[in-house]
Length: 435
Ligand code: ADP
Ligand code: MG
Image (cartoon, rainbow, N blue to C red; front, side, top):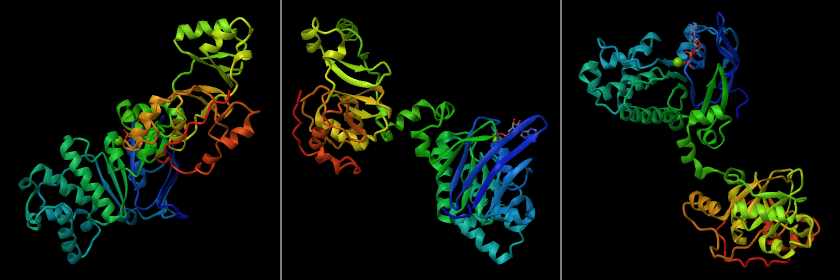
């Protein structure tokens, strides 16, 4: 990242009487970025954008372009550097296409030769024949006029282009085509864009980074991918919408995101209570925690049935060696090793060791197929094991401290794969039970 951001907005605020339009807006934009503002109506998108080229003056805060405070710049000089396209503005009907394209260069007093060349260059970018320059807008189809409208925004060669819902009123097909054109031109010409939209699909398609706005502040500023993967809060998630979040699911990365609720019982419970819970929930293995919810072990139905009368608590009969995975573990790093071992279910714990849920083998297999495009990573035999252990790691491990040394030896082959992405597994023999 450069020392000075191309565009840097700090603590920007705009108040109209009692009404706070922009509260405390902050962003740093690098040259060549395509920034999309999205948010509910009245969240301050237009006001923020208009302060960038001083169509609105800030109440407080600063806006810098290449380190230069815009409020201290000559407005004419400023607008030479910043292009602005307002909502759904069409071509001027009484001007030719050429004069429409050259509207701003003329205002900026370019010389005629440069303007003639620019007009030709722009009509080519709109993928229209050169002789269309002499036509009037009414002689072009609606879609062709829209294309001219887009290239016109770039005609004056300004380094920053502001667009406020330029495609808001268009039908989806026209809009889609113009989005492609804008994105293509932006990349080819290396321009920096700040683009307001209320359409999440548009933002996801165009933006290098999306700025989610609410009540005059930026709620989240991130790449489309990160916004989909990790919406900062419920407001963002709602704005994205459930359908898009589901579509984004193959990019899920942590175990915590695919866990389900675990059936567990506290270690002081009686075997009878455990049995009753197992019947009620129809499970044959029960996870056991201490009173703080820390995972301590597990117990199988057969064991309970066996030792039912001889023990006072489940703690006395549980197997303290339970294989677990941390909820923060990256799936691509851990899935392979989990699947290899053939567990049906694996308990998930947080960093403190608290049980937070389980991941099922079925969910993991689905994940692998989604994420790796169907490449199997596991020996998909049906050697379902229960939740015994192989050993401690940073992200997968065992609850049993005493057995640690032996367990480390057992997983030594895994240790050097720690930081590598999951690889298709060779057929590997499942470690033997040792209880
Ligand atoms: P958006 O573009 O996100 O829909 P705006 O920036 O247009 O939001 O508006 C933000 C808030 O500021 C709204 O509450 C709006 O009513 C108010 N506002 C905008 N312009 C003016 C103005 N010229 N005078 C008074 N209030 C305004
Ligand atoms: Mg607006």
